[in-house]
Length: 187
Picture 1 (cartoon, one colour):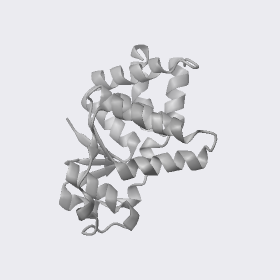
Picture 2: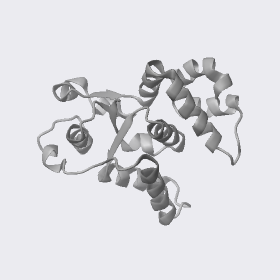
Picture 3: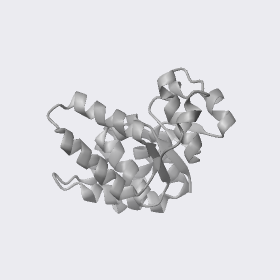
């Protein structure tokens, strides 16, 4: 099973977060994150959505952790200073990925994780659309089951398959949705 470190920018958008957590819950991949990543996406939600109360965001985090288990990476901090990335503020992500044994960093900011900086650590950076699509290519049955479960969880309001796929597409999973259309009857 592939071990992937999830950057804050893929945990912030609700659609992307939901899909990734459902895939992790379905044992399609093993996720990792860190306290610093949690703080980043939580701050982003607070800033962009001041109507969401801090206790609601904390509850959301607790639900995420309960859903996928203990995936918190700790003890990576000494590695941070040894790493070089275009944005020094992203070194904590690479350090935690290395320390946690991840092979992939799932991020929307690919430019911040150049191949030359990751290759010595045998880690690659993947956009969430590429990542989910690669999981679909590797195990379509498990991914389709997880995606169907994610759609089934949406009850307020419930979404038709077409509405759900449009939502995924609008959420950035364009290539994934193109491949998922073949499985529409199973979603």
